[in-house]
Image 1 (cartoon, rainbow, N blue to C red):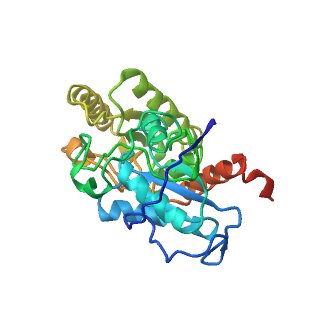
Image 2 (tube, one colour):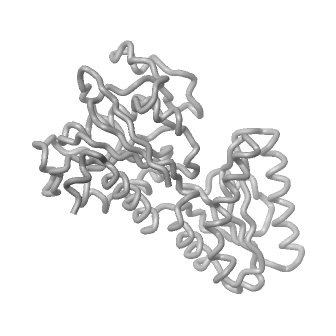
Length: 318
């Protein structure tokens, strides 16, 4: 696992509210709701965001971390506005060193863009007009804000390259999801289905990494087969081929008399898969990776790694 660091410096901090874990009233540096923060370390979790249920699932997974660190969430696809809000809230609690954990499936998602927004590498312009944020976008996706400028902060940032596809802890989630659905493993095929990117090489990396997370299903589950694939949802031509392959696999299992268990390798929920699989016989509970304690453990381990790697905080680690 590679950790990257950076320094973002600006002349002032813009305080404002926004999405994230519920912010408390600002307290003096070194004290946040009884949690020792003498090291002034906080955690910023990036997550795509979605419906209220989607967001609440993420919040539930992160809540236990608040006993250890100030934690804030920036929803969106590396949106500068959301990141600025989360950074402001952390700094209002006296945080000077921020560990960034990205709750995306792929660690490649928005990686360079995030580094630029946080000032960890050049590329993001200065914010021109803070009062016009609601009118300034750079062509966001799915109707989501996607502003691109460098956050205004004097905090030091550290960020890992990992996503949930890299997290060994997710093997426990997949195993638990399949066990809950399973009736007769020897007569069941498990489909682990993820969103997937457009680039072919990157898509194969998704499949390879998620396949590694599914290895426990193969070794301990006793299932007839485990099939890992992606739908490549945002690229129509590639999605069509992926969808045909997926439906053909499930139909073949059904024709052979086996039951198919579909487990979404998504942060939360079942996405568009109900429509995609219409007319096919399969079992699912529609639950993604959250909520599950393994996701909490992964975020916790990422945060601890970032804290221990901080050149400023290493001398106060116990």
